[in-house]
Each structure stands twice: as structure tokens, then as C-alpha cells.
Image (cartoon, rainbow over all chains, first blue to last red; front, side, top):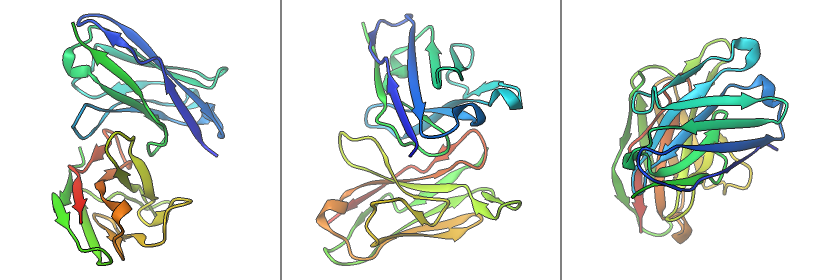
Length: 114
Length: 112
């Protein structure tokens, strides 16, 4: 059974940085292209980026609101996906989910506030 | 980018009655090489993460009651709740995962 467990969410000041993680199990993580999706409080779901498998080049691409500030990486030896978030803004406040194709995790809450 | 248009925005249905939610994508999400629609439906209740109830347009997830069914192909999709129960009150979202950026519908609020 596919399991994706997000962690690392925290309260961060505007302009600050945070790295969140997604621990994967139940499938061959190294073969999958992985995505991050977020949901701001009271809002809809927003795709923010994807990283390809290493065998497909390992490149990442991002949605416009986070491009240049967020970086997706992966550690296939640890079956873990990461999202490094820099220059955080209050509008980045959201629950963040990782996903292969559909959201299956509980998410981790990132709050950006002074 | 593929645009998802979900309707209606809200829906009030009597207990035991049928509820129907529609979603249209601006481009086909049917992958011809495997004949699969890269399309899903979610249910979200207050304070909870979205729960996928249908993937691949019509494959009901394990544990989801059979009163929920997904149908459609290409660009037009429907989620049907055949006999609405009190516990089905929630927000429902559609999603395409055919290509990035993934897009989600705006949501449909289902009430009794």
C-alpha cells in the first residue's frame, strides 16, 4: 500500500526558510515522479512542483508563485522527498502534501507569520 | 495548461436522493497508449485532508461506499452519489494529473 507521510511543518517568519519532508513506502520510490501540492486555509488545492525520477533526468519544475524560491529534491536511498522553501511569504501559509498522482497523505502545516 | 471547470459550486440534496457533480477539462486527459483517464475525485470534510474517492476517472478507492461512482472520459466527467447520506456532506474536488501543472476544480459544496 502506498504511504506518504509529510513532516517538518512549522511556524516561520516572513523571509525565512524551511525544509519539509515526505517519507515514502509501499512502492518503488526511485521510479516515480513526485509532486508537491498545497492548500491554503479556506482555499482550494494548488500544485506547486514536480521532480522526475533520476532515470528520467531528475529535473524539477515549479508553479509560477514559487519558482525561484522553492526547490524540490529527492533522496532515493532514504525514500524521501524534500521541499526547500526560501524567502517565505505569508501567502505560502498552507498545508503541504506530497503525491505521486493523487493526494494520499495527511499533509504538514507551514505557517508564515510575524 | 489544462483548465478544470467544476459545477455546480454548491448543491443541496435531500437525504436518500441522487447528487451529481460535473467537471470538464479544457483538453483531453485520456492517455491513448494505456487508455486511462488521468482524473480523480476527492472528498474533503472540515479540518481534514482531501480524501481520494475515485481515481482513473472511474476506479473507486478501497473502502469507499459503492453509492459513489465516477464516470466519463476525455474531457467530461461526473461524480454521482446515488443515495446521499448525512456523512457525505463535504466539499468535492476534481483533479487532472495528465500533465503538469496539475489542476483542480474549484470545488462543489454538497449539503443536505
